[in-house]
Amino acid sequence: MRCDFHMHSTVSDGRLAPAALIELAARERVEVCALTDHDELAGIEEARACGERLGVRVLAGIEISVSARDGDLELHLLGIGFDPDFPELRRRAAEWRADRAERARRMLAQLRASGVEIEFSHVERLSGGAIGRPHVARALVERGICRDEDEAFRRLLRRGRPGYVARSDLEPREAIDLIHAAGGLASLAHPPRSRGADAPGGLEAFVERLARLGLDALEVQHPAHRPGQVRRLRRLCRELDLIETGGSDFHGAPGERPGRIRGRLAVGGPVWDGIRQKLENRAG
Image (cartoon, rainbow, N blue to C red):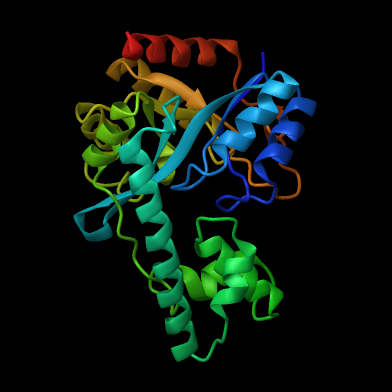
């Protein structure tokens, strides 16, 4: 069985529309997946409709940006298997969409002050809903200001660079509670990449604090994870009674494939069994 619980469409910063993404997932023989656009729900209905037509089970998903301690702690929480029509979640998603647009405008103003001119309409055209730094990076590449998106982030968009604007995100407990209220699971996306994971006590203490707040799962399988990190995360799941999730973090870049991580299968049936059981327990 082939599954993928971390994928992005043009509704956030992916390169394929929701239906096109599910069509590709079906061709890759993915049977169960989650569309997890950044701070957005707008692609779920289209993805599910396509999944029903092609025999792919599509779970409602979202990747929520979370921060605390004045930005010293930054992480992404994956909500999986929730009700996408839950009113409070839909209200928050609308707020996040507006906040992202305002953040992009501030980024462009700061870039303009440093001599780099990019129009908001250009960035907006590149986004499908949730505007983010990747869309600004793509605009910088299209304008010939940077060679590629990596250079755009390195030179202009990362913390401490001219175009960086801090996010106004949820606190971890608030995000976890919101996902739970909507009936879903809260999984920490790519844990070693979280800002603050290397604080005193290391990754273990970092995850343990989140587990006390109600975290359900860790994203164990991810393209950025080395084999030693995968083993470490699996050990943490056992010690803290967390379930395992995983996915390709598909955005549509060259070489990426839904359901696969560096050419290997991403996650299989046992991971889906754990997620399904947890969701059934929560519903019950």
